[in-house]
Image (cartoon, rainbow, N blue to C red; front, side):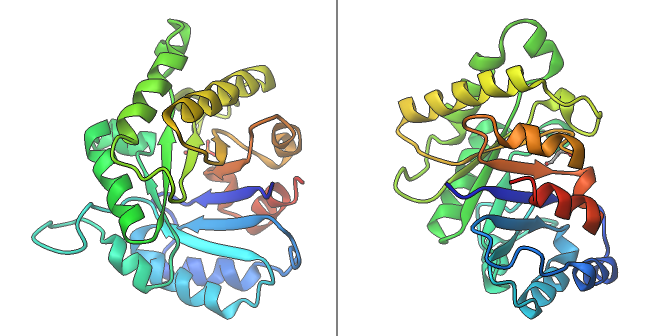
Length: 245
Ligand code: 13P
C-alpha cells in the first residue's frame, strides 16, 4: 500500500517562506507511489497551492488546511472554509489535532460535523486522535482512542475516503517518540477499532518523527505514513523522512 507523508506546519511559514520552501523542494520523488501532503497555515494556503501547481511532481503531491468549519460560508468570524480549500485545489482537511482539542476546546461532536462536512464536499478528512500521558499511564489509551474514533466518526460516510492520524499528545513537539512497541500495539488497536466501526483508513503516526527514526517506524505494521510537525519545516529533513521507504 502507498504511504502518506504529511507535513503539519502549524502556525509557521508566511506566504513568502512557503514559496521559498517549495522553490527548494526537489523532484527527488518522481515516480514514487507514495503521497506527500502539506498542511500550511491558512494564510499561506494560496501560496502553497500556487507553488505546488508549478511543480511537475510526477507523484501524488497535495495539500490541505489544518482546520475548517462545518459550513462553507456564513457569519463565522475567524473560521476557515473547506469550500475555499477545494477551490484552491486542496485535498485534505486536518480535523481534531490535539492542539485544536486542547487549546481551542474542540469536542468530538464538533469534529464529527467537520468530518461529515469535509467528506460531503469531496475532500478527505484526516482525523487526529491521541491520548495524553496521564491517560496512557492510567492504562486508558485504547478506550480514549475508541471514544475519539466512535464519536468523531459518528456522522462519517464509510464509503468515502478517510485518513486517521494517531498522535500521542505526550510525543508531540517533545522529542519523546513512542517506542516501536507502543506504536505497533496502538496502531493495531486503532486498526481494530476502525474495523469494528466499519471503516478502512490509512493510519498515520505523528509525534517527534525525525529523519533518524522514520525508517524504523515506517516498517511497523499498520503504520501507513506520518504526520510530521517540526521536522517538516526544513526541506532536507522532510525529504529524508519522505524517503524512509
Ligand atoms: P512534531 O513532529 O513536532 O512532534 O509534531 C507532531 C504533530 O503535531 C504533527 O501534527
